[in-house]
Image (cartoon, one colour):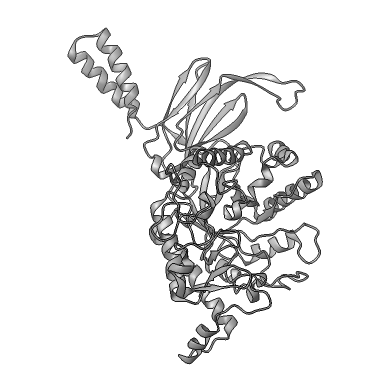
Length: 522
């Protein structure tokens, strides 16, 4: 049983001054310890909190989102990061997907790959004055109650907007596994053993050393055809060697087998290090033309050699975010038709949180489209709903979008849906104390902070309950003693008094505890 030691200390000092006799003080301390450590009754939460994954991608490749340019100072990088995170908090997002490996490099300290060009304009150059960008982002995100998912690109080695190829580049240090494409890109050959070994080592390193909430992979497996125009991916020698050793798969199936192997082993690596870390994959939004009927377009199965449906059905991921960047009514690529089809493939009931296009939603009509897509997600995915915005620029300097988020789509906070297959243990209901004055300050005993992600503080004003979600690092919140509310059946707002407070704890996998309730004296 937990004892509120600060309270015991304060009261003990008071009674020592009032009663100097030692035996009386000892008796009083014993009573205080027993009373204050006595377990309180716990109850189900008074109202159901909203559950929805609300995330945005932050792209570092080509400095799309952060940092703004490769040559901004460390101080400006950090201020820009805080601005992005503050925007997410302001609009009730609960997760950020930060690209930390855009081209076989690192936006964090790594012994496996060089510092990213996009941080300094020079690959291999550490930030000066030194800081670790990923560690900084994690700390700032968690302070704000936001999950941070580290986004890696598993195969791209050099981007055409990634500066000169340095001596530190994988083009030189992992040359046997790297191929050059006619467009100027360099790519890891997915069939080469060193490619799989190296990318898995990177994923393990990030998961092991950083307090991330998720590891995220995008849609770049074998490169899109435009990256090597009118030519086949240059792996003919590897395929001939495979055939010479008795291999019987077609080249297409052989290529898919390597991607499948990587995805399967990646999931195993993440879970072997930190089972609570979610693995997410965001493939192209169409699996194959004709699936479902009426769907047309790019065939990722045949062109990227990505059997994304297999990964979902095998459970080699915890959340699945197909990039559904099309309109609701678009012939051949209808948003709800594709989402409904993917949900039907979700036989293991993993999270499906589609990617939606928001970066260019600048008009009221475009914002209507985004809001309607969010509503479709809620209707089809129900309590397991969510989405990821491509990209965070869609909520910066975009008044139509930000107004709609604030007043409608994300008007209240939400918890990330629980991942019960990772860990379904229910945390203990937290204890808390109240300090009453002009405000009521709730101070939560947070001894289990490393095992929790959030607290939920419920407050009852009159007959209405409301809630606030707190980061687990934040164990205190001030609530007003009375507020104005428009109650059912009344036209004018009335003053209502804070009557009850309840607090719950939320585990790292999203499982909410029972609540401890306190009734305020009137």
